[in-house]
Image 1 (cartoon, rainbow, N blue to C red):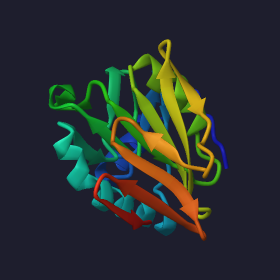
Image 2 (tube, rainbow, N blue to C red):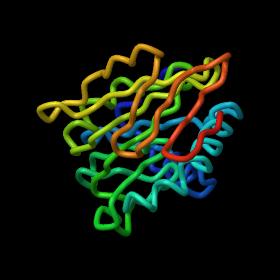
Image 3 (tube, one colour):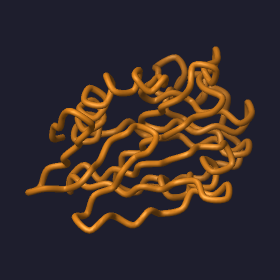
Length: 184
């Protein structure tokens, strides 16, 4: 159910903060988006992905965090499921830039509406993961805009940022890298 409140009562915002329900909320040019918590398949996919690519992230001079705010300003930020960034992007409030974001699709989410924001924040790549189908879409910055990347002949997507190849094989997402592979 979508809800639009022109003004959120301060008591509601305080209660969400007190209960920890606001950690995934996003601010879109000053408009608060209250995001519900993700379900089990969503969370499991994200955890599995991070555990697999984590060791490769540091070797590329990057860091990774789960559900961390990516800020353009105090009133304009998104909370990608995973964010991969350079150490200098790290700040007290989250990150102030990113090399790659991973958005895991949930029913009725706003993943595709975030593409323009991520483009404006200078994100080099965006992976959109479909956990139930074990498939991904890849977007890459071209001329300052994140554009869809067509898969290769075997259905593979190559992340230049992470140095991995992703493709769906027999209902599983296969991730390969120089010297190894695994499935999610």
